[in-house]
Image (cartoon, rainbow, N blue to C red; front, top):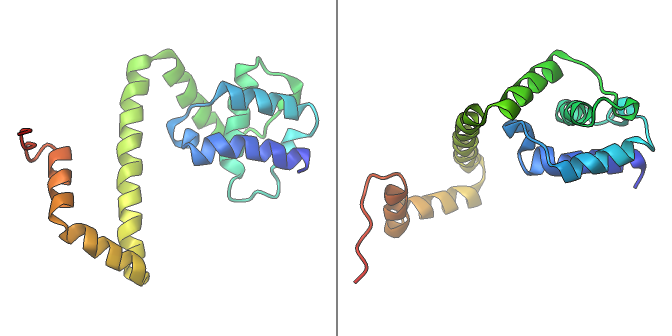
Length: 158
């Protein structure tokens, strides 16, 4: 892979796959990989062809720029999105309570979004629809969910 692709992949692993973009956090291991790769490629043009991922890639680069004390190799494109991202990142870096509250809120939001996507896809995909109907009609699954949401008490072990 080219250095541009390696750079993007290092960021995508954390930002997209591990939801780092939503939680506004970084992995120092990924950040260090990005720092080393930034020595071998121009970071500001490396993401030009990643149209849909440009913002998460650029935001990660901005946090790396800040964490590693603004090295020239980690220059990023400053946008309104990156400024807002860095503001939130810094607030959470300095306030554990705020970070915890936002983390829980983000977790709930992502959970609800994933469930709504399943429902939406079930309208158009027969297999997903059958799977969803099977899950909803399963008594043990419903009981498990009611216990998870605290609406029902678990059975005591006999």
